[in-house]
Length: 550
Image 1: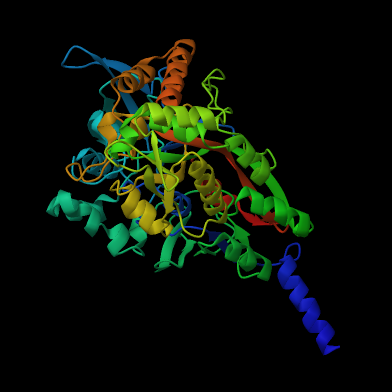
Image 2: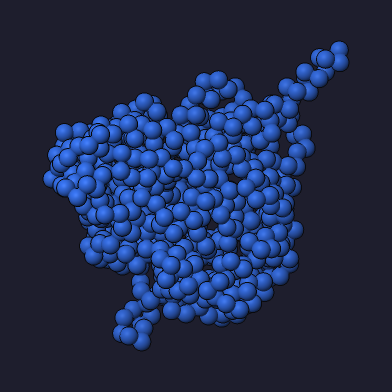
């Protein structure tokens, strides 16, 4: 009888709470630990996922890809008078956009969220040495004014089709961060309270606030008593980091993790295999997303300055065979940086077919016409040998690396695998461009202008505090001109022409090797409800207050 009771208790623990049973803690598993928790410094999926639970931007894209208010009363538009065109002193035309903050919006210490919090964010964002990842957006704002405590007026230096999209404008608590920033803007990124006093409730204005951090292991959040929105069901959420995806699965099946984040958890092949074994315990949803896996080629590496070498790498890779074998066709080969789900996708973007003979011919044309010990080299004895890195412990990425390593070897190209934990890889190696070949993924919002990732002004350097996300170091006058043009074009049809030209240029130049468009596998325990995948960079955790037991 006692053994039977213990077995029944164990079974209930595995299946989750019964209908209506009280449960106040949820443990979520992810595969990365954030390199920083400052919302404006560095770009890393793990940081975004966690901060979505604790902070709210002014606007966001919802699950239907519609731009909506989050920390504003009404989305300002030209039509409703919340935005207007204004003449600028230089004779050009800008856009004045007015946001009204919710009257009851507060930081986690009870201090009201006010306009001066936006002014500080703008000052930090536009500072050339503050280390902000995408400072260009802040520098385009000519001024930020407080019409009153709850009304913010932004004056932008141009009129763009995304004039009212402030989804990446992160307010900072002026009463906490201003003194730290003004003391020394150039070292602010190392002294911010987000990293030195992470559990300070005043840093968070969302439904949860961070209450405990175990570096590299976990982040605990509890409900924010000053949150002005819908009351969350779970009192406490623990985000556990398990960088090895096989170990992550074991933790889920053992019950030590309740749910694995769809955006930052299982690889697709892993989820497909899990569904065959555990379909009765979980709901499986494969969500095509605006995310693509790719390999950055550092343009400062001498061999990668030759387009023929870059193109040869694509021709020597059997990407169709790779996605067919690993993903059962659910993740198609990528053409460029735009996903087929996006309205701006150009179906006629060039595709590089697997062609080993073509790859070898291109390498020979580039001067690598000698083969020594199976590796091509040029007349100066320079070998086609590169270091290839990604996030350690990600099983599918490491498998893809090994497949590509073998395929490129057949073309006379040697790659040496060197992987690192995500917090090091994203926080240091990529950010400071200390790599030769780097595999990772970019997430975007619908019709997202790639200024920070492709424009030459967005190349991270020591001089600019490693700001920007153009990690490969792409320097293209044609791409710069198209990026400048596409965001100023308000006619959707005319924009599609420019978008098509950009995708073609990106594919032809092969500064980056597109691998495949990813689908996020959401493996949700049957007792958990309210998780709404979005398919873009504003994750499901941005609606965490709706998560609940069934």
